[in-house]
Length: 255
Image 1: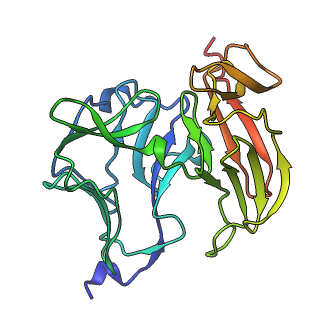
Image 2: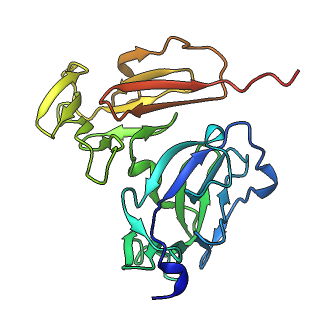
């Protein structure tokens, strides 16, 4: 085993909001094939507006300046030579230097030509027509961002305090009902069912969690305390204690 792989770290690759941390000069509109993010090099893929970045969970940026909103490879032990790569075959992979490829987007046959980290925090893989063939918004971890749909049979899973999977999940069943579950089968909160099929949950930019029908009409809503207030960022998170919380972030005044 190479010398640098002897020191095992509990690492993963993160999509973060970097609140108040200027990354605009690093932003890029396109991530070409064969691009790689290495844990050793502490590289980042940054959205054009500089607000979001994909990186390893190194400590190069203070923890109080970042909010993790999506994770690939959570609760895994990775070697120091691990990396994320957009391969020449158009597949996004997480390569563990201890075990090989341990996660992938499974897009090898979808003619991917590039990737992009959008200004709304959505990591997308694109074909030559610039159509999205895979997106992180379709595979949430424990967080929803404004504009992100949460549809039938999708799941949010709370982060875990240890190496085991979390007991808490947010799930949307076939009737369009949001359910908070413990150990998959104990339901301890529901949104109530509007008795309408094909609903999806949606977090609005002004601080409302809505259930919407196929015509994007809201049929059920919850509102944050700062609904309609001007804030820098919002996100909905299923926390480690099983509570579903709506967060907002206001950057401090520079005056």
